[in-house]
Length: 268
Length: 287
Image (cartoon, rainbow over the protein chains, first blue to last red):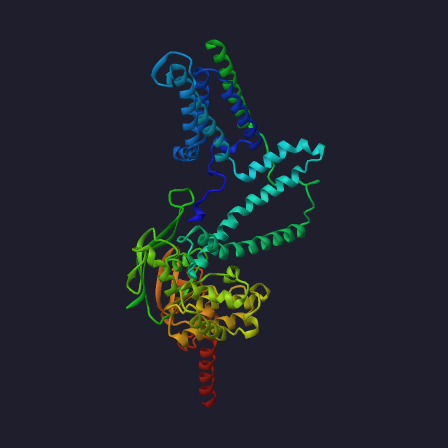
C-alpha cells in the first residue's frame, strides 16, 4: 500500500529528545557532526560512538527503525570501505596479489570510515525521528530569521515548506483513492511494457492534478478568510521554548566534543 | 448460493507501527444474489474497508472472501475479472473523472473489459439513459458539468460495466435533497432493471429504509448484524446505543406505542406510516 510510506520519519514518543527544543536539536546535530569529523583516531571515534549510543538510548526509538534508516546507505558504506581498502598502499602489507595490495593502514582507515558514516547517519536521523516535520520547519524558520535583514523571504519559504509537508499525506491518500477507483474500473497498472504502464498512469495523474489545484484554491481562500497577510506581526500558537532538558542536551554535547578533542591530544 | 461470502475476514491497518488499527474484525457474512442491501455504521466503523475487500482492492490480513464461490487472492491474475463482476463506486466518485468527454469516461470501464465497440456503445447509451444524461452532455468535458451531473457520470462509469454486484459508498453525500432523490432513484431503477445485487453504504437511515430490503450494520470494526430491514430496525434500542438512529418516522411510531397508540412497529417509511395513520383515523371517524 502506498499509504505505508512514512513521510519524514517522525516516530511519535515522549522521550527527553522528543521534548527538546527543535532549534537546539538542529544546532546540536551540527555539533555532533563536527564532533565526528574532529575525531582523528579510533579512540576519538569511540567517544563519538558512545555519544551516539547514549543519545539513541535516551530517544527510546526502536532499534528496528534505526536499521531502516541505515538501509539506503549500505551501498555507500560498502563503496567507501572497498575504496579505502584497496587504494591505501602505505603500512604493513598483509596480502598481495599482482596489483592488489592489502595493508594494515587500509583496513584501519576503511573501518574508521565505515563506523563514522554509520554514526553520522544514526545520530542525525535521531533528529528527524524525534522531531515532527512541522516542528522542524518552524525551527528552521527561527534559525534563519536573521536572514530577513538581507531580504530573504524566510517566513514565506517556511510557510511554503509547511504547506507542502502538510499536503503530502493528503495527496498520498488522494492518489491511493484515485488508484483504487480506477482499479475498480479495471485499470491495469501492474502489467505491460513501460509505455503501457506510463499510459495507465493518465487516469490517475489527471484527477490528481485537478485535485491539487482544487486544494490550492480552497486553502488560499481559507487563509484569506482568516486574514493571512504574510509573516509580519504574526504570533504563534506553539511557541518554541527552551527548557532545562535543552540545557542538559547542550552540556552533554559539549562534554563529548571536549572529550573528543582531549582524546585526540592524548593519543595523537 | 451466496454471491458474496466472507469467513473470519480481518483487516489491520499499519500493522507493526504505533498507528496499528483493526478496521475489520472477524466478519462472517453471506449476501444472497439479488439482494438490495444497505450498509450502515458509524464513521470509522469499518464499512468502507469492508466493501473494498469485496472486489479485491484490499487483501485481508486474515480470513477469506468468496465471490460466486471463488476465493479471492488465490490467483492474483483473476482479481481483474473479479473487479468487473463486483463494481465499486467510491465516495465522491466525481473526483476520478479524467477523460476528454463524458462518453469516453463512461467507456473506460467497459473498454478495460475488452468488449467490442458496438457492445460498449450499447452499454453507454443504455446507462446514460438510466442515469438521465442527455446526448448533448455526452460530448462535453466532464469538468464542465455541475456536481450532481459529474456524480451521475461517475456512477454510470461503473454501471456500464454491468457488474453482478454493484457497491456504492455514500453515493448521495454532499448533494441537495433533490439530487439525492434522483441518484437513489436511479440506483433503485438499476436494481429493478437488472435484478443484480446492490450494496448501498449510507449515513441516512431514511434513504436506507426507503430503498433496501436488507441491512448490514457495522459497529466498532465488527459485524453487528445482517438481516431484513424490519428486523434490524426492530432493534432500535441497540442501534441507538451505537449512535445510529432509526428513521424518524419509526421513532414517532414507537413513541406513539409508548403513549398507548399501538399501530405496529414495522413502520420505517413515511409513506407506510401515513397510510397507517389514515387507516386508523378513518376507522375512528367511522365510530
